[in-house]
Length: 325
Image (cartoon, rainbow, N blue to C red):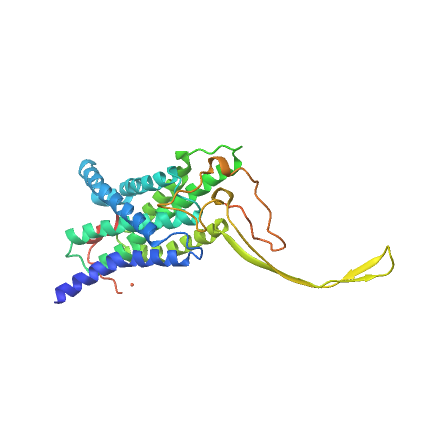
């Protein structure tokens, strides 16, 4: 019974935290740009990428003349981030990413799916490892996998959007959009893997920094989401006629003005931004029809156009090296 409870605890702390964090970010999206079906598809795609990465990493680890520690610190980040990035590149190429919010949530969901399957592998192969290992993998490694791909997606979206705004009517897909984001993702992954002898430090750093990064990007991305608002005014009029040629008008009129708008290239789509499973209007022909518009009415800052845990339980470094892959 105790063994069963212990194993259940290990599985829970390794798999649940990243899913809870993903649900929190989806909930924080006040515009509800993604639904449960779309998030489930992204989780599945991330799981498939982990299945693809497992034999690749195993083959390289057996082939390269380096130990596990050096591999996890300097090679694994490049391989795993590249495999995850392939899915995001395909989504961009198929025009399934609308707003930056879509890109961030999609990236984190794919990374979450990747980390869940990876942790299932390790839970099955190394059931003897203690609770501390799975805490690091659940709260640290899993969160890191989601954050790195979210950063890659956000940076790629920014480059794609800038080129769209600056083009003279043409829009095309370019792989170089993803190079800066890939470099940033690999750098974050590599930094996380540099603390094999201090896993608690890596986990706490990830838990503190990752949410700040993601919330910051989410807040920045809201500039692209549909805008809703109201502009009340009042005016009642009366006219005083002084003579046949001169009159004076005074008064107050009461009225209410509501508005709702979205980026030009999604103007003809549904009321929420389409992402996985729903095509968006191609930006090839629509995005240059209007120049960046000014603030709506007297309300400044509203724009129509898209913008831009426990005591130290680790007995040895070797037994917990899997926390850094």
